[in-house]
Amino acid sequence: MSRFLVRFSSIVSSGATAKSISPQKRIFVGIRLISTSTGLQSLTRYDQSTDWQRKLTPEQYVVTREKGTEVPFSGIYLNHNEVGMYHCVCCDSPLFSSEAKYDAGTGWPSFHEAHGTWEKDESHANIVRRPDNSLGSTGTEVICKHMSGKWYLLTVASRCKNLLESGFKVESTTVTWTVTGDKVSVSTVRKLNFECWEIKQNYMKTKTPGQLFLKGKRPDENMDIMVLETDYSSYAMLVFKRAAKITMKLYGRSSEVPDKIVDTFEDRAKTFNLGLDVIFQYPDYGFCESTEKVLGKI
Image 1 (cartoon, one colour):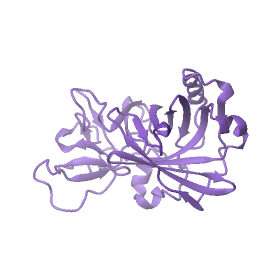
Image 2 (image 1 turned 180 degrees about the horizontal axis):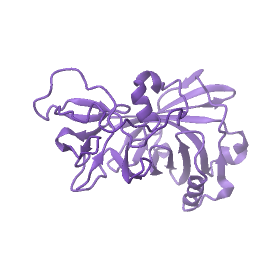
Image 3 (image 1 turned 45 degrees about the vertical axis):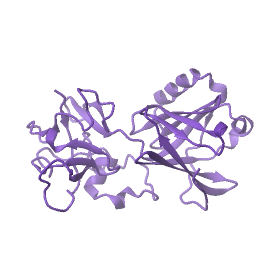
Image 4 (image 1 turned 180 degrees about the vertical axis):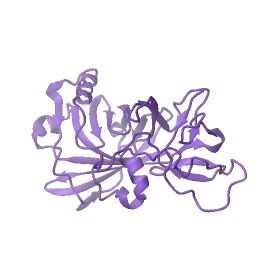
């Protein structure tokens, strides 16, 4: 039986307790299983545009953005029995049903399975489980399985003509994903001609998890996007295919990722016939704090 030990950090939506699971009451939560120590500095770059510190309570911020957790047996959701669905406090994804909740005696809320699990198959669930030993014993870290939020563009592998001719001129670039319904709104911020631009696009979801579609102005400009590899919390590798042209990009939640991730990216790029001669590193400084011009949605 799968067991989830989950750190909840948020306030239950106001209103009367639901009597049945449908309609489900939304219970917004934050999830982490990693401890933090006094004086630990933020593990995420402060972002004025997203401003998580204003959107979240101090406790929620520590748990969801800095990988913190509360002392066992102290959380408000440990003995919480309200009927409904537990949602992520950051991206609003449904994570766990109250029907799967039970007391494991660990000091944190526990669940038999995640919402969307089918006979142990978690491919359609909104969580990812990873081994975690940070509390001094074997446990499981539970994070949201979503690309939502801000990413830094770190490396691009491409035979794009512009990159081949002037790759040394690449500018610091950030991308923010907002997942809603059947689409993903993408905001790219970078400098063009010494001005900070925001480029807005809508990626459409497909029936295949991890694959998206961007409709162009003409059929030959349509683009297929595939999330090749990601841990959702620190790095993501994406493949962009338009006609016969393929580009691969490495993103990070911060402006740096471990060397082993970069090595993996380069190895994966070779499988698309993209060698070191067509890999371009993007600057990790000089990011736009605000935008002066906006290029509308495609």
